[in-house]
Image (tube, rainbow, N blue to C red; front, side, top):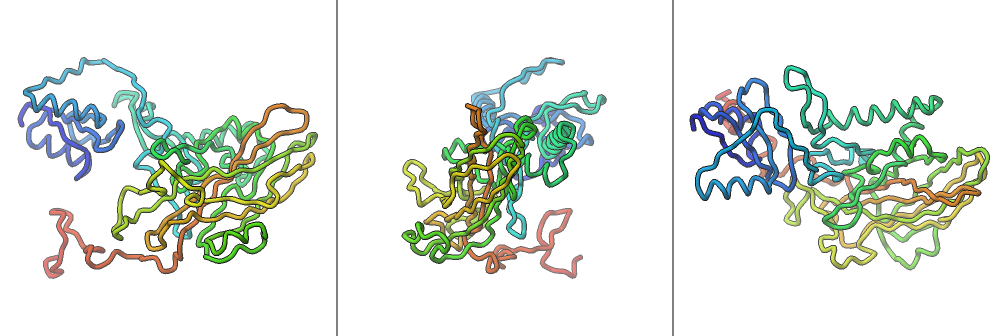
Length: 386
């Protein structure tokens, strides 16, 4: 391998391990292609003195097909740079954390750009680099908070959170056509302009339904025909901060994908699966539904009101498969004397089952938890060898 560039597929071990193995074998560089759709921005330790670049799965296929036909030459003119759009731009990154919290609270609350971000970098390392992760998304959110606080210095921490979350823009999953679950995206992509200009506050801005029991709906007679379903009721307080104009609002539901990390055979999956599995023909009851006896309201200048919503879980979800369902309550807003309308959201999500009987540890057959030798990477079964 001496003097050659190694082409490897992502997965199996860390980027740093791939780079180290290649360097130890005499390689002068590594090209790592993605094992899922889209581009990637791998990072390796500075202790590995050879170039390590990441390319998309499509580009990787082109490279491997070319190599299968014979030798290939890599050219990288010094200083050459090309800007191309990210194929997964606007979507949740595959490495992004997935909620909920251990208490089944909704996390994350909001999303921000964090994948393949062209950003400043230490001058000794080139001044600029394309990077991914919370190191990119977190300063973005920090910047939006600073802008919001500068524009509206009277806001406290809770008010800032409410405005940023309720003004998020839900993200559509291109694979299903439904909204991406708030357990992955929060309330959607942060929108600082709308947060600054907002004249209404929702409390809470997120509805964490936690466990929801199966029974007949109580408190809303029109829903008695639904029979015995999994449901929850929540109340949202809405405050019109415009002291001169009345606010007219109405609400609607935007269902999101249901999410599970458990496969149909009961095993754990690192890649979440979504429901409905077949999106070519989706009936209404296979999606979460939102009902309200007061779906339209008028709120006077500087006044507040409350809206109660009844949320019904999708049918077809199996309790033992640990499904999380959710979506977004869209509030369409219009103030007196104004022709235009705006929309803000309250995201919601719940667990389809009883979390108190969920497995905490993997079954013994999985071999976990385990003691692992940090040198060999193999499980240690004989403690006397430690």
